[in-house]
Each structure stands twice: as structure tokens, then as C-alpha cells.
Amino acid sequence: MPPEQYVKPASSPRVIVAAVIITAGRVLACERSSPPEAAGRWEFPGGKVEAGETEQQALARECVEELGVRVTVGDRVGPDVPLAHGRALLRVYAAELLGGDIPKALEHRSMRWLTVDQLDSVPWLPADKPIVAELPELLT
View 1 (cartoon, rainbow, N blue to C red):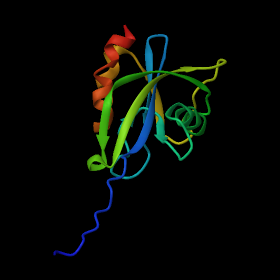
View 2 (cartoon, helix red, strand yellow; view 1 turned 180 degrees about the vertical axis):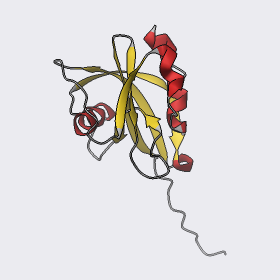
View 3 (cartoon, rainbow, N blue to C red; view 1 turned 60 degrees about the vertical axis):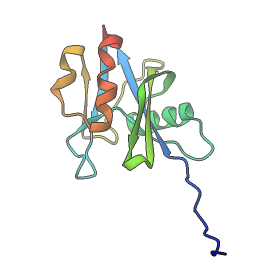
View 4 (cartoon, rainbow, N blue to C red; view 1 turned 90 degrees about the horizontal axis):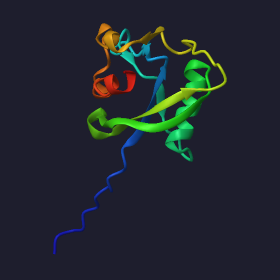
């Protein structure tokens, strides 16, 4: 009889959430400052879902940390985007600014409000490109 082999169970991919914040027909895009391989590329703000958080709670927390704004998290935008060779998954949600809050680039090099005609004016990170493809419907 062959010896038993133990197989490590497959763990669920880490979930990364991001916000599509649209105001007056423009979407907020943020320029990465790090890590070096992503610096200068553009993304939607967000980050990792921590233990004990829902995706919506994580996104609201990340918007406070990265932009200094409060948001209401709405519906999903676009497909799940696999990251890190399947070890992570990007999920993007529509988000609305609360109480007149104005975003500040607290963790990014810069940020811009882009119209539908300006979506291709910045070099997006590969993971965000499938989401950018969904935006014309939301911005018009």
C-alpha cells in the first residue's frame, strides 16, 4: 500500500476591492506611486479585504485611508479580474461620495477626474482595463 500523501487544501483567492467613483459624468482615476513596477500607472482606489470585513466595509475603509472621503458602496462594475496568477481577485464597485467630501491623493502620486473621452489618456494597470471597458455605459 502506498504511503498517504497530504495535499494542502486550496485556499480562496485574496479579494481586492476597488471603487469606481463617478461625479458629474467623470470617473476618478488615481496614479500609483509604488511599487516601482506599478508607479506611474493608473488605477481605481481600493485595497485588500481584511478578515472580518465585508467587501463593502473594506472599500469604504480604503476610500477613507487613500482619499480621505466617505462613500456609499453600490453595485458591482464589470467582471471579477484574476490577479497574481489566481492568488487574488479584483472586484470593483460603484461608489458615491458622501456629504460633499472631496478626494485627496493621500496614497497616490496624483489623481484625475476623467470623462468618457479621456479614459484612454492615462496608462491603466492591466487589472483595471476590463473595468475601464465598462465605463462608457456609466459615464454617458
